[in-house]
Length: 112
Image 1: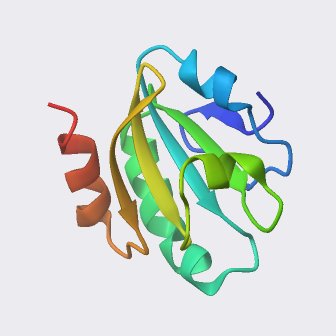
Image 2: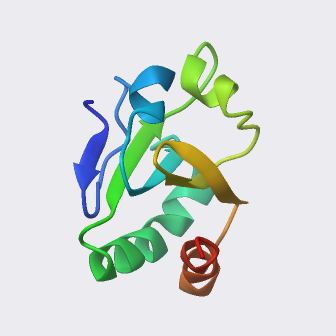
């Protein structure tokens, strides 16, 4: 999966994993949808980086979303950035247009 990295993934990738690849993930992962030119995505970048650097074991999948991008539609993404918390490839929580580290921590704490 080209958009997948353990720990912080700094760049949105055009090549996104398939839904089957996402569904086959094991353990916890963060799936992030956005675009490099999106002002909301740029504003949230530092918060995502800070939290991901605290959770180096977490898989971070950063997908360049947009018109005609299938994975974003399959997850019902309408606004950027969208962070989706996955457990074994299944969505357990999400946040949209977040701005703070606290919001991301709340997302990660929802996995209990």
